[in-house]
Amino acid sequence: MFDRFFQQAEERSGDNDVPIDTSNVPKHIAIIMDGNGRWAKKKGLPRIAGHREGMKVIHRIVEKANDLQVKYLTLYAFSTENWKRPKTEVDFLMKLPEQFLDKELPKLKRNNVKVRIMGDESVLPVHTLRAVHKAVDETAANTGLILNFALNYGSRHEIVNMVKQIGEEIESNTLSPADINEKLLTERLLSSGLPDPDLLIRTSGEIRLSNFMLWQLAYSEFWFTNVLWPDFGEEDLEEAIRTYQQRKRRYGGI
Ligand code: FPP
Image (cartoon, rainbow, N blue to C red):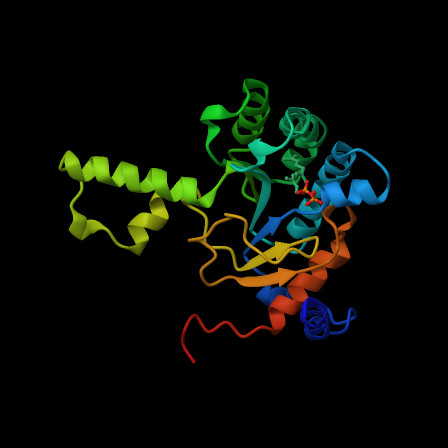
């Protein structure tokens, strides 16, 4: 069944030679970067080798997205559930933002990229936060692509916290239940200030959301590929965008 699903998806994406319609590029692309572990296993390497390789893909995809004038790129780098992994793997994953930014921050700055973080920062290691905040601060004035790292992010956790905060405000009479609407909730989420993703990409053949942006993805187009994240290239991003451009977005209308 899934084979047919992917086959149909490939058919819809059409000819690789069809140029991307620059007037209809998704403004916000969100990516679940999956398959690092399987990539490493296939090569007889430890799982962390897959994450290292996965990190290397990021700079190419950021550059490509920037070239295509994508305005927002959200990358699911670590979920609230990923703490269940062995400590050595978690420790390694927590070092990746520093490694990536040590090398890439000067280029991100030159390319006018603005870095953002979305997640529960309260339990992230100091060294991880230091690296990310440095990048956020030093790119704050940039006006190009917004690169949003979902780090210790979980959509349910995000929603529970938002509801708690709203409950407290109602209790202290600073908010009335009558003021609660979609706009207010959207502004209270960790993605506040970003438009909803137009396109969600998930690599590695898994077809699920894994607690990622449940509210924000309500009307997004989904694109799944069997390609493992460390093998994901610029041409895969282009294919996802071409497929997106063939979709008819109706938002519940006809
Ligand atoms: C999922 O693959 C991937 C992750 C949990 C981590 C993703 C992180 C990166 C790609 C690098 C992050 C870098 C920066 C700069 C933040 P998996 O390990 O679940 O793969 P598997 O399903 O094949 O085991």
